[in-house]
Image 1 (tube, rainbow, N blue to C red):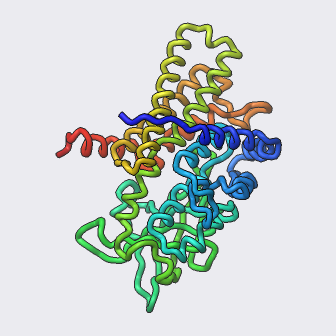
Image 2: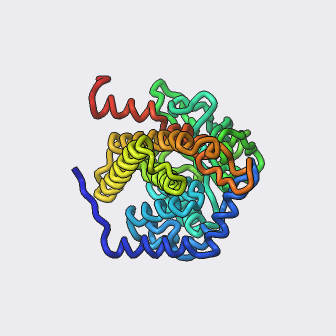
Length: 385
């Protein structure tokens, strides 16, 4: 059992971040986001640029790329505090934690120098183009193709369910460069500029407050310099990065924040005096603490260079399923008032109603609960061998 403890310097960093996120200018941005009308959502926020000025947005990146050269713990502290302060975190997670991590791991020095500083400063966003209409969890089934064109490539295909792509400057795209009987062979990763002819981005409204995107790639030309990692070797890169997306950290932080809001409201309206609610709330609080410990245990393993797919699958599964349970109970304890959205009535926060809509999507993001259970059953419990 791995243990972790924050150093004095890390605790100081958390307090500095928390103080910054409590500033009036930050609170005004966060509050304005939560008052947006239906079907409007935040893109790149001033808060990201302010964090970039402090070199905190990508605090774990080397200084030459816009970070401070700190570690995964500081990066994770920042993520927790953003969620705690109700500052939208998705652009940060996709751009820095996912696309940035891929470039840091497999990108050339020229790619890093060209792309990472703009992400770290909060001036640019990146998106991910993996999922396709017929290739969701089974990424090896993707059909988007990259056809050779002189010294470069032409991309043809369609990607769906990508988030924040309408605000992004470029995307990390997985495409097939070789047809092979081995499904995992022949996938290559490309850096795709999104604001260019040959790329069409449409939004797909859904039940949550943030829209998915439908992206068509119609012969956009890319050069060799746009290839991330080896040609036909994209699957290995994805395999190395996907566990990092599944720490469960952001999901447990969202579950904790939602439960704290429910507890605060229950204390105000007297629900905490009801024995039936007391037992359930204590139980959910214990589960939230467990999710927190599991996520930080994963972070500790990343820091030690001892990450495995099973521990991340367990943490991600536990945290996302817990969020769904907490959101359902939030409606139960809150009654009819909790079903109001922020647009239904003056003064309604809509927190619990929005969380209930978001819950199912969280269990799909970064790998479905079913895939997480499969990984645990096959690789840890050996039930499918």
